[in-house]
Amino acid sequence: MGMKAVADHYERSGLFELLQRRLTEHGISSPSRADFSALDQMHMRGQTGTEDVIAATGMSAGMKVADLGAGLGGSARIFADLVDAEVTAVDLTPSFCATAEAINAAVGLADRIRVLEGDATATGLDAGMFDIVTTLHACMNIPDKEGVYREAFRLLKPGGRFCFYDVVLGPGGAPRYPTPWAERPELSHLIPADEMRALCEKAGLRTMEVRDLTEEAKAGSRARREEARRRAETGAAAPLQAGDILMGETAGEKMRNMAHNFDADHVGVVLGVFEKP
Ligand SMILES: C[S@@+](CC[C@H](N)C(=O)[O-])C[C@H]1O[C@@H](n2cnc3c(N)ncnc32)[C@H](O)[C@@H]1O
Image (spheres, rainbow, N blue to C red):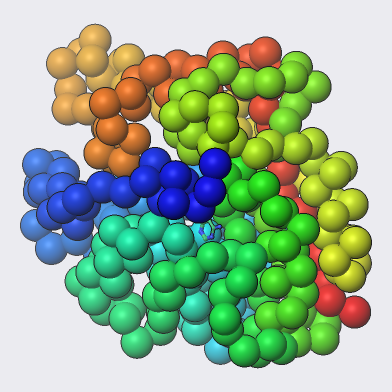
């Protein structure tokens, strides 16, 4: 399965308008970056996960950051807004890049974020230009993970840091599909966390930290399910989220499978931080 099949899995038309409409339905007519962050964090634990990446890498004002597999640019906007980093957001899926640009413009962050349609293993960006390279929940779709880590190494300045925050293969074996990142198993390329770490080191990066966040991810999705159930029971408005918009017709099945995949240890969530010597 090639990159075209991965981009096709994520492609959606009219995404910006659909997200805006969802916000309007919740009474938000001129959304801020924080309002969009309720919809655009396509990884476990939402903004908390992105904030973990900021803290773990020591990201600070003025740093140049490349986010590989940036999706709708949700993390890039948090890096730019909360830290005042200068971000390059690279993603394969054309409608995600266009939507990222539209949201950046709508929340006044277009001058802090450059969006680039491209492949995380070969971005075409200049070498040695970045203080930090991140990738959040994109490598599940990428068979050549070493290629991503080599590209991160190439993009970093000496002393710069690489961080992955990813879904990994757990001890329970192959997950149940469809999942949010793969309608069918051919699109999924999960490996265990220790293999990811070994590939980063093979690419020349030095390990600073590998942190298992599986229990935190499980607790986060349990809390979200309970909140949705409580609201449904009391007749309150559904929580503000965009899973149905982003994951399409099989969104419910994907979320049920993820609950099973976590419960049966088919998947885990790990954050790794590495340094370019
Ligand atoms: C689950 S989304 C995560 C998006 C974003 N990092 C986030 O956490 O919100 C996975 C993203 O990886 C992108 N992707 C998959 N393979 C890629 C590749 N080879 N190069 C660049 N982006 C890729 C997809 O287009 C999609 O936007």
